[in-house]
Length: 446
Image 1 (cartoon, rainbow, N blue to C red):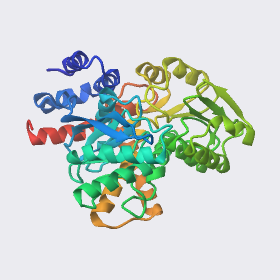
Image 2: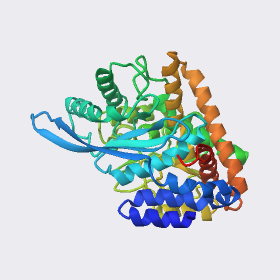
Image 3: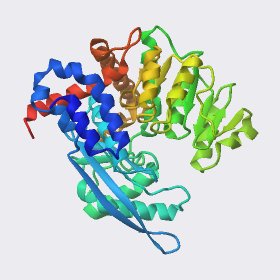
Image 4: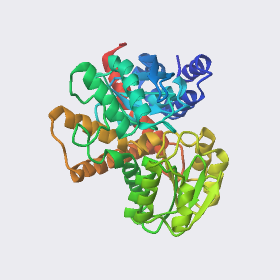
């Protein structure tokens, strides 16, 4: 079976899972050369095996709302590959969650985790539960109910979930409390816990900070820095907030945030005071549009943030948020660097546009790996029962992101196809894939 026949099989078996098919095809398009260079990969059908998760666990979640009525949601855990370590990946609570979305995320997570250099496999999970509009008590009861089912299939050396969209420190704490209650063990089975009871410093900032650390290394390749550069950020959640903050720290000028209702533009640039306002406002589920009355700027209802002149674009919202037309707008407005803070925010067509026009493009599996990297460091801290300082962890995060960048650059230069710019997409896919593939070959056919 060839890579192409493996893709055809995925398309046939999972035609109803377009995000998963997109993720598989994106990796497949970049690894054919390395596959040809390593006959053992084909002999052991490595790619074909990685296209099927080890297992998909699905379950019903019954919980009681504030009116005393029983509500029913669906829950999943996709355990994709533990070739190089325990399954590792977030839990997402959002009404759009389904098996196909989680399979795409879990598939990406295999290679993202491998790129960190830490011993972590790939997995993902979540529920179609929508936290928006729910009371604190309802969220707590749902998290307890979700973990009552999930706890049977996770463990510190088996599967270590974390947070994702809709799942922050509060939700992780509730789930960890239930896990601890059911198992009578205090272990590092969930990452993203509160600091002081198993959590790690810098975990909150890690994905956004790591994104900008990766971008900084991209700029250094061209003897540039962020100083004086204009940055477009999408999203207004955790990743977007801390990416904007770190970009500001390194001398960049961030002029946009966005959410599902529109885009906030401040052409004077977001200061730390303004970013702190956004953090507090979004934490209380209030509208970004309120910013204009406080600080000025402009609220563009129903619009996206890719229509302004800039040097850098950091899409940090959700998958497939940047369309082909959006990518053309980025080209038109002079963007030279695109680094993904979300998972697969560019559509396949958008990726083609930015690569064809010589924009340096960093895929999420490399650029947003900072979050899972610090999750891995939290696992280590839990194992040895010793916490590290913010400064120590920040230094480790910078080193990990530099290593991911450098390894992706080397592989991209060897196997890449873009001209005049480093092929980070090919490089990240190859560097992550080879590590996992070598492990699978070493294991034989199991």
